[in-house]
Length: 276
Length: 362
Ligand SMILES: Cc1cc2nc3c(=O)[nH]c(=O)nc-3n(C[C@H](O)[C@H](O)[C@H](O)COP(=O)(O)OP(=O)(O)OC[C@H]3O[C@@H](n4cnc5c(N)ncnc54)[C@H](O)[C@@H]3O)c2cc1C
Ligand code: SF4
Ligand code: SF4
Ligand code: FES
Image: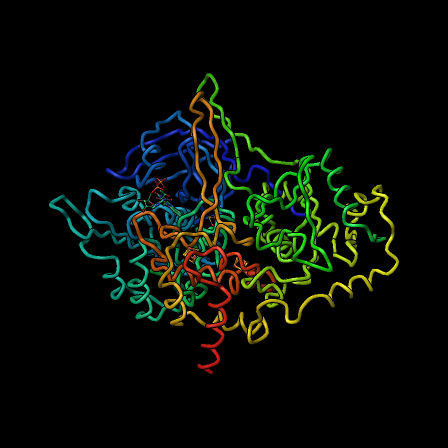
């Protein structure tokens, strides 16, 4: 008999221990859990403010036996606007973790190429953290992260710190400097791929960004000879349940919340609804 | 398990008596032509199909029961949890599950199959505790069909006509206003144990008599076996048929709302207006035919055109869910979607056209 969790659709309230604006649109939260969530990188939680609503938010910290849960939330609508006003000491509700996420064992001994567009860096940070923490288990790590202007950059200080870790390269890009000081490069995340020192047989690539980004990055990676089962993509859909029941996140016969949101490209490339 | 052969009026009296101490639901008329599964009260008039003149007793049919009985297991506006803020300002959400015992009587084979399919769907992976709590405490009394509902029905073609799985008791009309009453589960047998019904000496003969009474073919038929139809739908992504049928679709979502195997939902939070320190989250039926169903933050819509949404709905019934659940089609052929659509878009016709298209291409 499968155990049925009567609380699966009811949030558990947890307290915010730290809250700070990262940009004009994104706010960073650290929550204190009563027990470790036991999540995998790439999983997400459903975040609630009871009375207001609920939305899927990626876990942006690495896994581990800790009572921390970190989230980066962009103000996009009714719930996230309310989250923006919450401070340390306030409560939010969480459910989860949901989704398949990444299996760190897949990355062992491999070179890893991470391509993040905008907010896509948040879920990928949950993968980058354990890669960096256990650095010698993995091959070369290359992180390409792009955003619109220097004012929109996420986790800038951390990216600089990652770039100082041996065998780790971080390429930070903006579309436009908008007349602000900028110590990275200018261009789209697709631009550096052609010139990377990369062994396609030893590399795994991981992509997360806005829907329009995938097609172009995948084209570049294909140009470098990377096989589709070596490319992971992290997809976004509207989600109302996280347990494969509300129907909103369906991608053809798959549900993004249960079968994803992380997919191997080889799994979804034949699905016409997967990519924009 | 012993079966019974009972006068219809005796059985109806028994149901009425049962309803005094159990929550019994039965298709009751809400207008001249439509029925709804409603709580049986002392003065409710219950009608069952007559063997000799199936039209005479003005029986309820699956066709006339809109919404389908499975909605009692997953009602619209369903309460998920309540919450209360304490004096320290901390919030306490509490799930509210419905464990009430219910009996759904008069469930037709297509709707029985739909419930069996939803049992699998709701129990799959991380189970839906609300559905399973209701379902685990619900007994089903099925009722056979000797005549097709109307020109929209295609239950035999969809493989539903002989469906009994999931029923605790199954009723089959017999000549001279009698009824074959078969318990199919221990719970069903227990319910009937004290009814005092006369035993049936030849169940096989009664079943055969009813089967022989049905017209053949029974309602609309596809021009190929169901497996071929499902295959044709699976191969039809680029077909012009989608655009042809969806061209006049309003994207109103009625077809989803009436379908016994549509279960998509949205959730809504509300504060209690009289006591804003408390409130609730409820869920509401949603429809993949609505324009914004697959829109994500930032405005990107993964199914922008009505044709893409129509294709999703049909694929879900004939391809996606069967793929996940061992090949059984999730369209039970009840005909509700075609019957209720204001612009006469009919899933049977869509599937038929796709099958014809597949034949041409081959
Ligand atoms: C797996 C996953 C992980 C995610 N991770 C993160 C993350 O780490 N950080 C983050 O900030 N976001 C993340 N998101 C996105 C986030 O879930 C959405 O931005 C969030 O749902 C917005 O909720 P809201 O209530 O604030 O907005 P809503 O009020 O729901 O509206 C936001 C936008 O969504 C669309 N929309 C929503 N509902 C409707 C509707 N009824 N009708 C029409 N349009 C509608 C519109 O485009 C609207 O502008 C993730 C999403 C997924 C699926
Ligand atoms: S097919 Fe008919 S019922 Fe369904 S959304 Fe379109 S117009 Fe409405
Ligand atoms: S798709 Fe239409 S005919 Fe098929 S089960 Fe649903 S409502 Fe009935
Ligand atoms: S979020 Fe409800 S089915 Fe995936």
